[in-house]
Image (cartoon, rainbow, N blue to C red; front, top):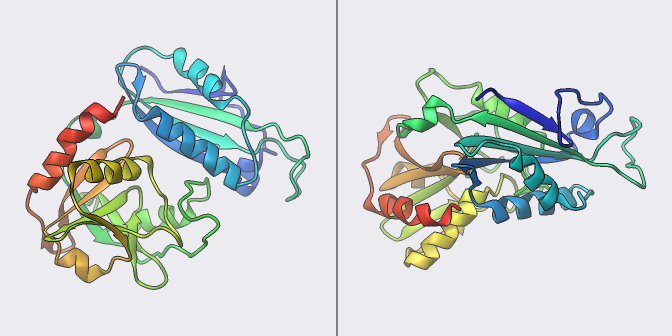
Length: 270
């Protein structure tokens, strides 16, 4: 299948230059993995989009039926769908219109070969840091400059991703995924109350750990905790649970806890 873009339900690649998502980054996004025509974790993605848009000052009336209509046009195959919502066309000023007309963009791509046979992740440490902003913490907004700059730091093409810290030296996430640390006490995932993206798959794994009786703590995470961990894994909605085999010079062995989470995840996806 060829890549396809729908803008407000129409197959076009034309976006107004005055769109507030383009001009100011006033918009939110999520990536949804589709298996045999069924979007995975649909209600979680929908809730994330609605809550994130609200935090940026706009709403999209009737979002769920609009997106279902868009997705209903697709063949019943495996796909990746990226949904972008913006505050719509503006007049060039920071002030929003009293009657905004949000823009809905749905980008459809086939599953890449890298996901069909996904090797474990190898990580490096990024120098670019994530800024603190409690008002935007957790939201996957369109302004991703820090993540973009960090991802360009890879010392070699074979590295999968890079870990990012905040100004205090706390590890927050990788450039494109949430982080989980496994040690003898259980799982730890970084506190995202000051910065970072609270991904849909992260929330799903937190729920799974609770259901399976795996202790999990949300807390500040240090480099030392990563270096001394029994195992690491990353999560996002496209790669799901992605085990880490190496961070810089530290290697990690396969973990039965991660394998247990992967098995338990499968029934939750649709």
